[in-house]
Image 1 (cartoon, rainbow, N blue to C red):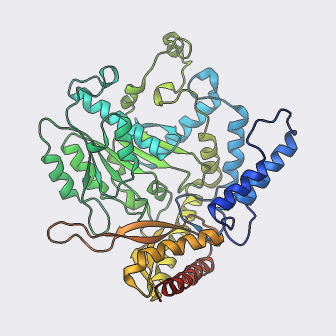
Image 2: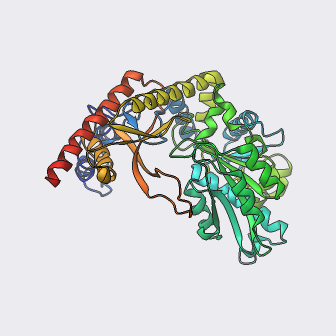
Image 3: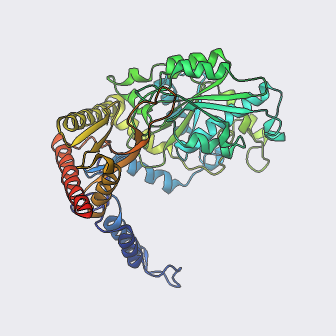
Amino acid sequence: VGTSLAHHAPGPLPAGTPAEVLAAASRALGPAALPERGAGELPALQLLARVMSQYGVDLAHPHAAAHLQPPTLTVAVAADVLAAAGNGSLDTYDSGPAGIAVERWLIGALTRLARLGPEADGVLTPGGSLSNLLGLHLARDAAALRRGVDVRRHGVAALPGPRVLCSEVAHFSVHRACAALGLGEDAVLPVPTDRDHRMRPDALDAALSALGPDETPIAVVATAGTTDFGTVDPLPAITEIAAHHGVWSHVDAAYGFGTLFSDRLAGRLDGIEAADSVTLDLHKIGWLPAATSVLLVSDPAGFGALDRQVAYLNPADDADAGFDGLLGRSLQTTRRADAVKAAAAFLALGRSGLGAMVDRCHDLARHAQARIESDPALELVTGADLTTVVFRYRGHDPAADDRLNAELRRSLLEAGTALIGRTEVPLAPADPAGTAAPRRVCLKFTLLNPTTTTDDIDRLIAAVLAAGRRCDHHARERTA
């Protein structure tokens, strides 16, 4: 890993306020108008390279630790050029047979890795949110058919009380998918989690059992790698409960699927093999250029909801003769061969090579956790389940710590010295009446750069502490 255009110093971001940086980048590009005469290929590329390097983010920098956004593998970047140069599409055989073959090879490798069974299938999508949308699309249509409703033709109006159950810390794309699918965000039933932010199977079973005859359970969505904490829901129990109630089980493993590369961490995804569908992002733990997301399904019959026969693309007689593509696997028609970059990484590094990178990032997170726990100015909120650590800086006034932590992070961003994440977490359990504790501003390290060293982590924590002291000093002055 380590592919990067950026060369600004001293950190992963250009220094300056957002308004200053964006204005400078805009000025470098010139007037926002299509030029009457072009400057030529080399000057155009040089200009864009300069803008991207001076004003972009350097994910290969060891202090880039905010998001599930890793530096990319050089071999994958080079392979992505092959896909772009060929400009093939995967919807029909005559639009790109090589790309179709590579995607089918990759899907086979991923379904075997997840142990989904010999009939399992899948498709690449533009991102994890779209994979979740597609998985819930298939689940919605399957649930509707069980009630004798053909949603594809007649819409969702005839589908009574649709319900999608997920944990209270599931990714927001579940809600957005329900809105896009016509179910409405109110269709989402949040299931309580335990103190480790994992869905409680007893609460899930109770919620499913409580559904009335005028309600239609669409899917149970388990999370394997929550965005904030990296925690994995108890997949064996959840998939078993979903099967008992006859409900589609979808696992959002956009973050956590990559642990299957690691002998040390793969066991955390035990139970994923029983899911009906799985989302995974290889542009997270996989180190591939975005976007490289995948939806896997245990039964390819689920894709029937997407089948289309179009005379100018895939007439029936051509399909019968083998001249068919992957149009019936996706909501897209034209679809580039994104599997090429993934295949390059798999072939170049193998499971052991990728697994070593996963283990290295996990080790970095554990080191960061230990350093945070040892410093009295820092408070550990959640430890290193995967590669994420959540914590807070303690200021002189605990009542002002939310503002302090937010300002601390922004000061690092504006200086360009460090890129760390932010979230909000209730720091205490609900009271006996069930009232949730207030959510507090927290800081977050998301560590996905295996070339980072423990010394780099120590320097990153030192930068956080220094920024915290400066911001706390300014806070004292404001209140003096």
